[in-house]
Image (cartoon, rainbow, N blue to C red; front, side, top):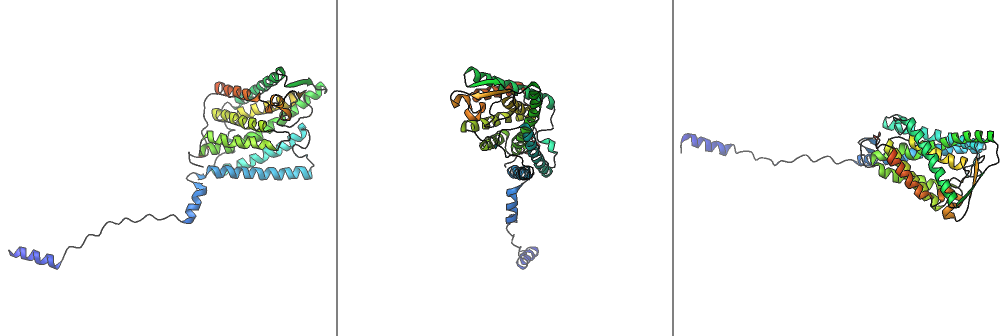
Length: 333
């Protein structure tokens, strides 16, 4: 062995190589209980869609209940369904409910940092869609009443009120049913629909809110299971118009015109409710499955072919222009 080899051997024995430590990655920090709880409520885009819709309904219901208490106990406004509907009482009551849902929409829009108009009210061609909806509502309701007349499911006669009274009543009822449509569409096809559609998809949102829309009619006196099913399906079809146009305007026009024609023009029961000071008077005749009985035309089996026609009208006349769901990116509710 040479001197250099001896030196290297001695050096290796004196300074042995340090063992290499095995790689040990730092384990990820486990989320705290508070963080896991927060994830239930908050997604990457803010309050989750399901909770946001629920909070919207809680605010609306609370404000409507408070407003109804004030109107009934302080101003002696009749409770809904306690007597025949009058345009004056309906306008007062619906102004309160519309105000409640607008406040709820405004409050929830602050969470999303959006304008309250973004939930179906800010849209191109809104005047054209509104007028189209009005025309379709009058024509389809009139067609249904004609069908019931031909099948002897209803009898129709003119009321005894004078011409000036008819004109005045017609204008007041137009305002009343515009407010009814505005409230119901804002509740079931406004903030809640756009929010749930952005969190899941439009079809799931339509199903959930149409079930709510149909069941909400259950408190009406004279309502029936057939009428509740028809109301739910009506909600599904109207949701289609919102999805096609990206706004509430066609739905508002159709909804208001349908109710106005049914209640004021023909004087028929509307989901079990009866209007006063109408142009004509309609009386159910024949079996309830045909006439609708106490529910009115919406409880008749004839409503289902009418809903099919309505679906075709929406598909053929409204361009496919899906809404840019304004609330958040797609995420599970």
